[in-house]
Length: 186
Image 1: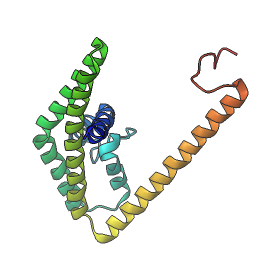
Image 2: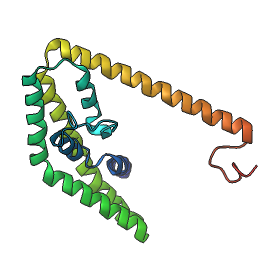
Image 3: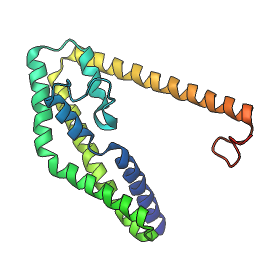
Image 4: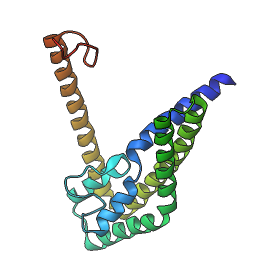
């Protein structure tokens, strides 16, 4: 029983940390779309983890009707998800404040679990939005979107590999582990 609770708490804490970085993405995407930034992604902005894939829609040959339907989906989400986004942002603020105030572990775990629940709700919402958008696309466009997604994942892996190589070079040059005491003092 205790092991299950620990696993659940760790999962909730991980979701809470993830939500610290992902919160408000859907709101920003819809607002940017309304401001003319495209399909919820402002030019030059990654869009966050929840709707990052929408950037690839620009590379598809969409008809005006498809564009209008996608905008409609994003606008409906913006209105429907406002309360959930506010709850997520509030939970994130409460957790940060509790950390800042030096709250005890049970309080932090409770706040992280609450944040995790809200983050999970937002992830489900993002998946539903993606599914709705995919129904607007043709079979060929969906296939192209998958190819673009695979290429993007490959670029991410290449970037991670380059970063690992840079850290390794730094370790070799200055000795020790990056981030360890004295790492940059040599």
